Image (cartoon, rainbow, N blue to C red; front, side):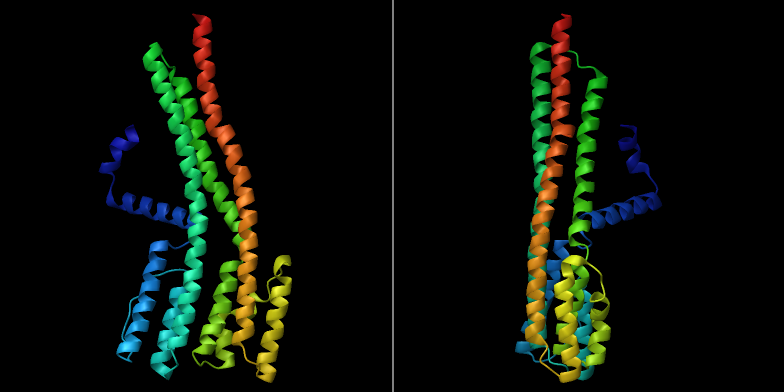
Length: 292
């Protein structure tokens, strides 16, 4: 209560610090950028494509920041202005990649807020039962019982956010770098950059050096493709798109593992954090009747 009273009187520096802390925490839990910014970037790329079709010229654009897609889009636009690199197919590739990313992010965040909705529902039913029983029976509810129930529910909610964060980190740790470098290589090569610049700017060589068991076959195919592209000049686009499809399949497998871990954790949190609060109240209720 005291904290809520003092919040409006905090200095501006404290507000900024709290805001930065909250944004940092939000980015860690949810995964960097918001879907709103991603949708804005998708709309920006669509606008660029339409202007290329109608005007045939390239203006100046301020694109929303979303993961690696914004930096990659700006590089492509810069090369198109400086070197006259082709843009239409490149913009299409960017839009396709961004659309898939936004769809996947939506699925992940749906799981987060779906779990929170379950907790809110259980907590609401518990406190509704508390209110009705206390009102009808004219009982006195001990402050310690209320605080213990609130603590269990609050700790359960916080635990779920932490569980979501760690499950996300464990299952999707390398995919951002994989898609960043693979799409970067595909789009920069399509934009007309040299082999050396495409490899350097995309960072694909660093990605293929990762030592992760589940990506062994994917990275082996990637190294073989790059070697043939550099030495024999084989077409890059077709096989690289197959690698991206394979990476998406691995991401879907990781999503299944993510759901299983999150489901088990959510069940335990419901039992220990929310149902236990309900049973604590029932115990206190029966204890009152036994005393009487």
